[in-house]
Length: 376
Image 1 (cartoon, rainbow, N blue to C red):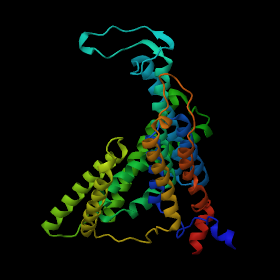
Image 2: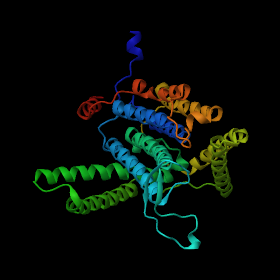
Image 3: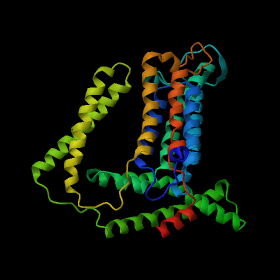
Image 4: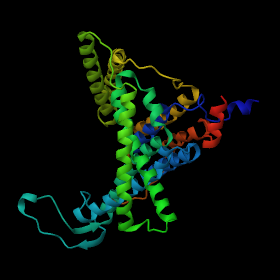
């Protein structure tokens, strides 16, 4: 009986995890990735995000975009290495891998180099840097694959609804594009036509763009039919107070976050961040008075949402503290070249990010979920 209570339940309309929890978890992992260039820690972060996505991903169209983000991360690493080869690196090195023909540049381009020596230290530095950017992209892709954009939009405060629509439409563009490309390539394969290469790409691109245009028109019609843009009348003083609180709060949040993440500004970062959060929440509360919409079956932020969001926050907090106390462990030296080691406490903090794979509701296959919803 006790073990059954601890087991993660089946996801359903009333038991689904709040989408904001998935985004907080993913942003926590992304914050942890931004604090280190240790390839072992970054690989551990990517593995944690990939395991959670594999364990809790649904069959929805947006859930299939995770592979595209992984491929995009690999492209980023490749581009970073190519730039390091052809444009040089600020890292000095003594282990020359190869020497490319150097293009002579005029005096006004002093400091820019094309070609020349390519050192092992510069390549390793570029690899670490590209791996950090790829880990950030993969964390964002994990949130995009796990959180429903429409439910996230429904959970936004009324003051952010209009901006949230634009963000959600932008976030759903990539998953829908990937789904269209897969559908068209499968159709071409069934007809015995080539689906790869430059010719196949050109013949698939036009229907994909046409589908994107049709969805945009349908979305605009749906928003117009649902009364998007209607607002309630509020006094001018309330509007001015809302703008001042929201703008000042966002500036305070940005300045406080920068103070926390910067290595020399941790003293003033926390109070500025808290003041910015309070001002922003006040602005959002006042701004919500202009919204006249209602919510149908709002998502509940329960204990499992707290656990999922808290696991990402713990991973970020442990990495920030480790970066302040032992920066050498999170930033392995490339001059001279050293073999990176896996620091114990940051790795343990990253492993806390695996918690959603055990406490988040288990996704239900699409036909079973429809049957459950129709019977309820």
